Length: 142
Picture 1 (cartoon, rainbow, N blue to C red):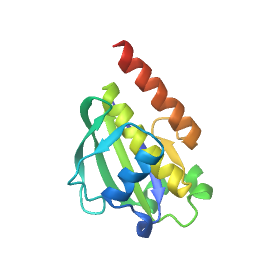
Picture 2: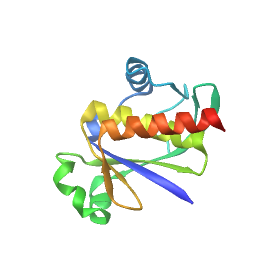
Picture 3: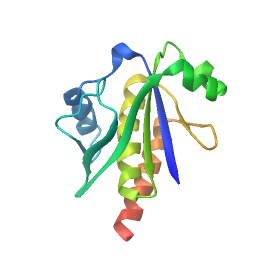
Picture 4: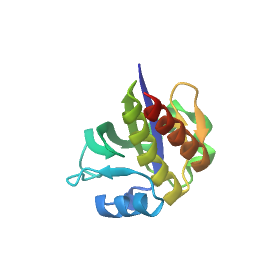
């Protein structure tokens, strides 16, 4: 089973790889993005490192309106967002942690909302950070 996290963002606020990595570093989140990542151009698997683990996640960029049609409850939180970044992972805790961490930094930067696909829930930045801690703890005990 795969899980998706979506971040609604303004297309002109899409970060470059270096600014995204700097933001992760500033929050002291243990994710190292692939040095070749080009957010606006790449889709598919994005390799990265979460703490000491080589991992990654699926990243796709789409139109915010398409996502909002699927999750109409998010419309009030979408503001001027015209772009949706979708992070997908399947069953692997390191992939989960890397997806949540990447999404959390975008969430914190742009004050957007992230629905959890299956239940149409909205995560706050604090929710995402708590989920990252849970994944981290589960990785430690695995």
